[in-house]
Length: 582
Ligand code: SF4
Ligand code: SF4
Ligand code: SF4
Ligand code: FES
Image (cartoon, rainbow, N blue to C red; front, side, top):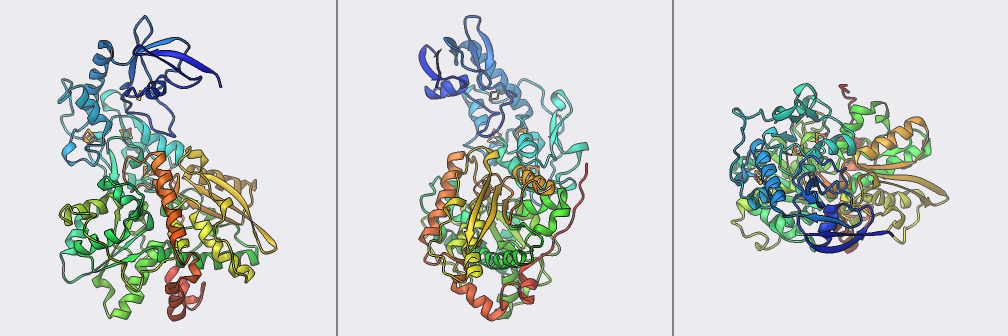
């Protein structure tokens, strides 16, 4: 590797050829503000918060786009740099509604730090006379353009990484904003509610539509039976909101806190994932036997389902007709459990707690109402659940004690727990499919060739593998991120690729980077969250979905067998071709 030497603030350093001055400074622990860069995103050089003074001439240049050259002399804190950064901070603050006290980013915000460092309390420059209209028509995503600092990261996330392309820059100068074409609402375009704009935005201009007030109101209503269910990634990441690491999932503590908040029952949503696995394994076997509608593609990621409905409706028959785990939980609660307890389903209020913003859209689908009432009433992201717990626990979380999940939906297998991992659905289904197809016991449940590193580049989210099952070899693909899903769908359309089974998660890096995960999400955090899910699977006594005693009981007493008429009625759904606007 070739190295170059340069001098930063009088300190000599050697760095590999090709790195930027920003990266070189970081290697010396010199902190340069940088508002418009994010790992995995192209560098735009838009914000100019990172300017440094270069060489004898003292020109100012953004450090994030400036490649290191041999013997370059850089000043990161000269009077000229400070004056420029102060001006940048002031201009940025002029167009940004500084509402730190009510902002999720408060205390972990690069803009706040920049304004604080350079002493900017208010701007001398003009501000808007009238605030711009907030777009809150979508059931999942809110966009407040008054906070936007025009860094462009959300546009990259939506257009380049997710290839949904429903937002872009519009107008010029101080009027410049990010918005859908022709000033439409996100609800009027093909937004799939993936929340990757939320993950990308450094200043909370995009955020999830909150269900907290609604949930609190229902919790105060003694006439309602309130039921929550937790996806496994929730227990792993929620502690981050309380400054804790993800070394140990806080499952029991969260169950206890939700009970204190007023929920009567708290269930494990991974049980719903176990049921998806059985239905999906059976569907895969049926399609392999018939040779029709292959590859089978998973359907548990709501933004992925909406994406294919908008952009590739002719490929909808490839989707597995099974509902998502959270919808299955809602169905079971409002049909099977309601009947067993003698409760009218309209008196039950179900809340899914999830890393996913697209579930907020999914719950509004009219077809997802097996009891005649929505299967899932409200969705809280991990961030919202943390806020609810903070409000209702008197600040004592996680020291309130712990409780187990409630019967009868308290037990899930390792396979169901893995659902949140990129590749976890595939692995979980194959553990069951192998035994269903061969009639033999699978000795080792870990499919190492399906596992891969996450948190790398967004384009790294496509893995292919060949899995021997008895005398046959199954060609499979694991895809995360909708840009990668588009590549796979295009190759299926053109006939370039042939698979038997494809797992798709709409978010890059899967649920570990879901739109409702705590912020900021770094590549390291994504890897840690993902590893924690695999560790949870390893700790489980039962690691195959079909060996979960609760699943066996449900099939014995209610569902008969996978793919049966009653299983289809309760656990399957249908998909809708949707409008493609441009
Ligand atoms: S994004 Fe940062 S600066 Fe803006 S309101 Fe939130 S905390 Fe304050
Ligand atoms: S939620 Fe997803 S699709 Fe919608 S605007 Fe954001 S990034 Fe684009
Ligand atoms: S909405 Fe957020 S991510 Fe998008 S350009 Fe504005 S500040 Fe950047
Ligand atoms: S971080 Fe360099 S221009 Fe924004």
